[in-house]
Image 1: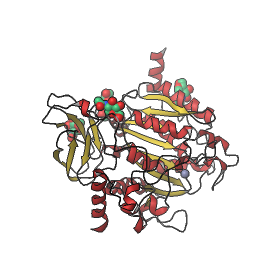
Image 2: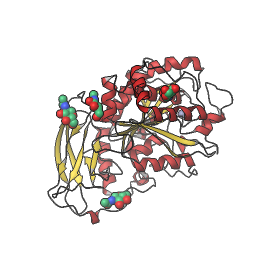
Image 3: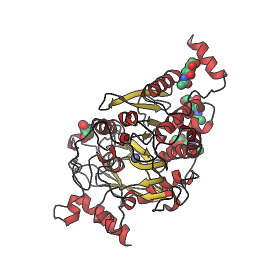
Image 4: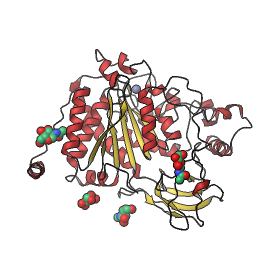
Length: 443
Ligand SMILES: *[C@@H]1O[C@H](CO)[C@@H](O)[C@H](O)[C@H]1NC(C)=O
Ligand SMILES: *[C@@H]1O[C@H](CO)[C@@H](O)[C@H](O)[C@H]1NC(C)=O
Ligand SMILES: *[C@@H]1O[C@H](CO)[C@@H](O)[C@H](O)[C@H]1NC(C)=O
Ligand SMILES: *[C@@H]1O[C@H](CO)[C@@H](O)[C@H](O)[C@H]1NC(C)=O
Ligand SMILES: [Zn+2]
């Protein structure tokens, strides 16, 4: 039985099972379940929690080893429809899923991507909002917020000021999910504009707000990532495709420069989840007629695929002690681009650092020891679906019991608060970050 179906599957031409229309929760669930049954060896479907009204928050994973992390295979994610009335991204991700699974074994590029990457796809973070839209509209609609009337992209902890808005079930589910995987790269799909926006969305003078912007120490990487997406989308790369007051040269913009916001998901990912995330605004109209969906798919398909590949830029590897034991929870940062919450190895002792080609010094810090420095040269981008691999052997035996259980430098409070008043309470890592930023801003 199964064998016969397998053969049929291999021999029959691929029929597009998914139509270009809007899929409500029951249809979306049926599609995801059908995909996960028909392509069980390369997919894994799970729900990361429930919305206020009890709808599942589905995530479909595509990868050669979809059920669990494998050492050396980076985790990537797409999240769409966190604003329930911004509907294009939701459908694009369903089509992306279909495209990935039906191309496996047929298209060498996609096969390579699936072999080398674990791709997590969440078509809707706000299923209640999507269902609440009564009349699809190009502009703001009731379904933007969740069922409790909270905007989920204002609902995350904020690194720059206290976010006192009550945390919503959808937000809590995503925050927990981020802790379960070592996500490296991500994008958050929206509508109502056509631009790739990169962190920060909020800021303080130390990140550049006096100059109407708020930049991370990884600004070169973020601009590159945003440009990668925008340059392959024929409409996004135009200066002002939606004919608005503000123009976006190259189709990219710093989030704060566009408009500051508190509690956004992309800043949270970068600061607390070690995951580089950008925000993709994919359609001038938030909820266009379904007849427009094929052209949105055509315009975004290459960008969506190319952006996933960027999870393989930079350097990755494992940190071992003298006995060859991998060390979890040790800080691995690049000199001169330290994060306000230091990036740490996962439970397999792995690190992933997204970097452009160039020369860098990696600083590995185990509490109680001097920082260990390793020089790396990232070669110009290769088509090998792998970051530069650099395992680092420390010249001592790790004392795991000295590694703090939770990071005292990384509490869920506004980490940059002290920077505003140049308070004496500024911690050493914050100070380094400041120095780096001033270097960037005033050179
Ligand atoms: C799964 O396979 C069944 C039986 O071949 C088919 O009818 C269905 O359309 C497939 N579903 C998807 C989403 O490919
Ligand atoms: C992908 O992985 C499969 C299974 O391990 C292997 O047979 C195939 O050769 C790989 N393909 C590519 C293009 O790497
Ligand atoms: C590609 O990367 C893999 C894994 O790091 C490595 O084993 C292989 O030699 C590389 N191939 C090329 C052509 O660089
Ligand atoms: C690493 O940190 C996590 C979370 O802070 C903690 O749960 C875990 O026990 C730590 N592991 C080790 C080996 O220190
Ligand atoms: Zn939005």
